[in-house]
Every structure is written in C-alpha cells, then in structure tokens.
Image (cartoon, rainbow, N blue to C red; front, side, top):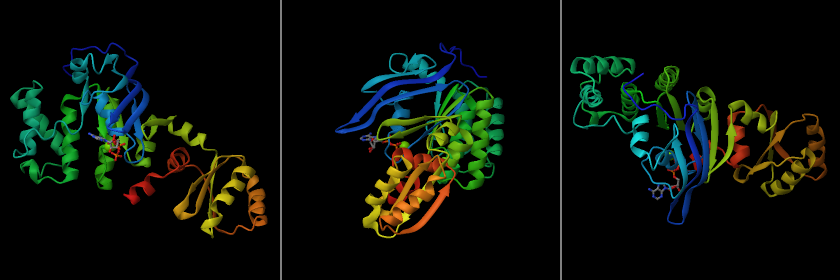
Length: 328
Ligand SMILES: Nc1ncnc2c1ncn2[C@@H]1O[C@H](COP(=O)(O)OP(=O)(O)OP(=O)(O)O)[C@@H](O)[C@H]1O
Ligand SMILES: [Mg+2]
C-alpha cells in the first residue's frame, strides 16, 4: 500500500487504549478511557464539546504524554515506541500547511517529495489529488488565502499521498458544505477500502451513523457507551417517548411518574421542560398519560419516535449535541 517497512505487530487491533488519563490542572480532561479499534474499520468517537475527544486522539497520536494508562497502535506503545507509532499514523492538520506562502500544488509536491516520491510522480500525484478534491482552480493560490473548507480538503488530500495504516481525523467535516462533506465521506470510505483504519471524531450524529462501524460516546473524560450504531440504538429501547410539560414546575413530578410507570430512567432537559424516555412497550403509554392526568400535570407535547443516534446521545449523556452546541 505504501513504503512502510514496519509490519504491524498486532494485526487485529489498530488502536488499544487502556485507562488513558490526561489532567490539565484540576481538570481531568481524559479520565480513564478504554478503546479498541479493529484494523480495517472506521471508528467514530462522539461526545459533547470538551468531552476529551481531541485530547484522547492527541495522546494516541504521540502528540501529548498520557498521565496514566497505555495506548497501543498496532501493538506498539505510544510512549515507548513513539518513533514507530509515528510512522504508522497520519493525523490531519499535520500535513497540509508545510508553508502558508506556497500554493496548494507546491505544498503537496513538497510533501510527496518528503515521502520519497520522485519529482514527476509528485507533480502527477498532486494534480490528481487536487482534481479529486475540487481544488484544481485554487491550486496555484497560496495556502494563506484558502478557506477553512478548502484547507480541510487539502489536508485530507495530503493524507492520501502517504496513506498510513491508521488515520486520525479530528472532526474532518466540521464546517464543510453538504457536497464537500459527502465527498469527504467517499474519500474516508476509500481510505478504508484500500487498507487503512480510520478513527474519527465528529459532532454530527448522521456522520457517525453513515460511516462508523463502531462508536464510542465520550462524556466528561469517560467512555459512557460503546458499540455498533445498531447496538447503541437498541440500548435506548425500541422507541423513545418525548413529553413536554406545560408548567416547568411540574417537570420533576412528571419525571417521577414516567420512571415509575415505564420502569425506566428518563432524562430531563429543564430549559425546554422536556422529558425523554426509552420505551420498550408502547402499550404503557396509555397508563402513563392517565397517571399524568391524575396527578394534574398538563402536557404541551407528546411524541413517540424511533431511536436516532440523537436519542442515544440524549439518553446516554443527558444532553444533546445540538443543544450543547447551541449553548456555546
Ligand atoms: N492544552 C490544554 N490545556 C488545558 N486544558 C486543556 C488543553 N486541551 C484541552 N483542555 C481541556 O480539556 C478538556 C477536553 O478538551 P478536548 O479538546 O479534548 O475536548 P473535545 O472533546 O475535543 O471537545 P470539542 O468537541 O469541543 O472539540 C476541555 O475541558 C478543555 O478545556
Ligand atoms: Mg476536539
């Protein structure tokens, strides 16, 4: 696949993290994270802002020293074997800006030459990648004039030159327009089809739904859920019930009744006076509505939805990604 002479010593797991910890002052940003990523898969890491996703990736990519725990990449220790690990991984953000004053083409050519490709081959590769990423028109412009979306595309293009066995993509499509996002997804799938493993973080649940073979949800430095998309969806029940109470002051009592009648742990988002509960048995809704009426609690909204990753998120972390993002 490329010029790497190092043979992964652990063919099965591309990433294995055990009890990873990173403390910044008083803040346990990563507080005992365990991860296992099978070689040849796309692994998604989800979590609200500040959950510790980037910090975890930085430790696994040898860019930050863990305070405790171990990280292994294809069996190699991120601390003891960091030199080897660095040759097995790509991290976006690392390549594209060799020099801000040079053009996109020049940057890609330099990068190819650094990887040992010949002059003609480097030029051909650069032109080919710029074409694939719709950057041909901008190829001659200096990088410092590139938009955020163009930079990200160039960044991923650069990681295709070397195509390392493991690629970390930290929010690869944040801020991209829908067409470019779809293009990125195609590229990521292509990377995996041709032998790479991808670990990506994302704020977009649909992205994880579309791309990831398995997902870890990280919240406050912990992995709070792990599994395939279907497993995670199943874990919140076959459907989810959403209730909104008219009087915000009723919310706690309403929640108590929901938990009691449905025999579940529901979640409350207080500002919206909304309760979300997993619901395995649709029959119980009638009982619930009667119980709420008996208690004199008036509802402004009732709906039953099939689970989405959004619900999974809400149920697991007690807060939605979108609400979290909106609060920022
Ligand atoms: N270099 C640093 N020094 C001090 N605190 C840091 C540093 N890097 C991250 N943090 C803190 O660690 C916590 C986790 O940050 P991290 O960037 O890993 O979160 P994240 O899950 O990637 O969030 P986002 O979705 O916003 O990218 C945050 O509270 C952040 O403020
Ligand atoms: Mg981050």
